[in-house]
Image (cartoon, rainbow, N blue to C red):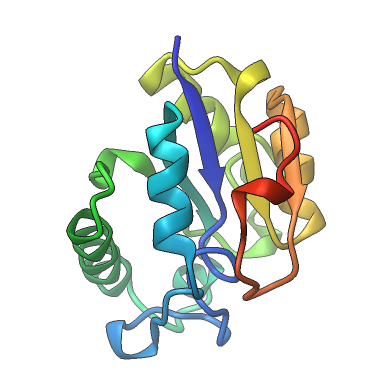
Length: 161
């Protein structure tokens, strides 16, 4: 079994400008690529779990999201992170859709567990909203960290990481 580093996208990986759906609006949070690369060296599989209600609300299309995701992953790989499209899970639904994938529901994390045979107890979830942490707990993730939105992370902040 693999241990995972679950990461919210907007506010953790990129600056949350509100409904980021285009490359020109995407800006990595300072230090996040080094953070993910260091975690990967410690044996963690990076997994992105992101609510993208901007799709369901019609602010941007699924095609826009996919194009942005491909660009983000390319930049991550250029930084030495081993990651591909299978490591990204998203919920495209609006909050009132009642789906099982929108955080705080655990659907995206449980799908990742199944896809990658993840040891949830020894995995981590980093999010900037209580719903990120609640989703992780609902999925059985053993370690969580609630960070401030758009804030640089340091591995030393995560006790036991």
